[in-house]
Length: 380
Image (tube, rainbow, N blue to C red; front, side, top):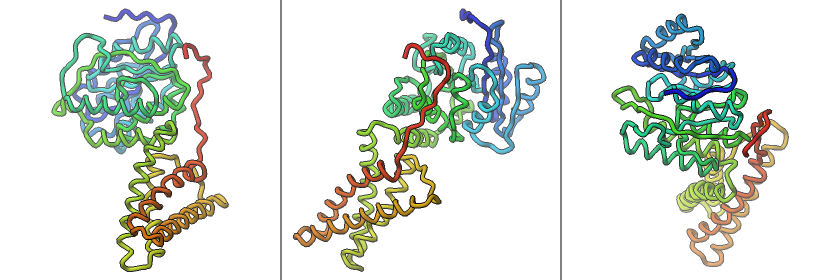
């Protein structure tokens, strides 16, 4: 039963990503259209992501029947993230949300989620499948649920947002907020990326329980374990660069450990065929490359313009200084009587500390950019 009464009229743009949903598209969209009333007008943007079934034709049929529906389509499959980016760019309503065409979510919940937005208490509202809204839920995959909750936990640790369901489909935004996000992810990684953008903004975020009637894989569920791995990567990639310093150091410890292991293994492998200095130098260069690659993939944002005068020279000079320090420590400790392995371990540890400080302050310096909304904030 719908008992939500809105105090003023507004338009709500709903982006519906669609890929091979011919069995459920019409029923899902008709349920969505039913949430309209005198105050709530819908703009429904169906984005067909190069479906191989009759979804696109059904979408066009619906658009002919209902003036609120707009149909866009991709000539090449881009994934859910690509479909959402296309829909967000087209949206014109005051608020923008997402609705899947697979009947897992109840569109009437959207009315409840809109309340904090309409009342100007929130800039974004998420519907949580784990805050019980109805007292009943379909029981499905234990491990799938645990992975979702685990990803939410990691997301909260990085973003400092106390969410219960980061991966939820039902995410609603003020239009100017979602259109300010420079979204990159083409598949299900769009979910943690959008939450990361929320955390980096000055947005007021609310959460409310929703009902959820999940599908099995036999019924058409598309997300898989690879998407979970990608989501975990996205949590690191989009959040680590602005995480609290202790967390950055912990992440860099693992990056440094991999680079240090590369350094040590390379040194021991090269030592039988070249001098100590040459082996240490070459091993360090390889390890520095591994460290750099992992840094830009996981921890820091790479915004250097290598064509700009002096940038490449500065980076090369800093690496060279570290190489000299590494080699000097290694040779010095070996002359003191330490084994090559022990000497290299100590040199690698010193290099870890210096590497982090130099990378953070000189190679990957970053001024965190935040998205700011023009409307006044309350209840912060």
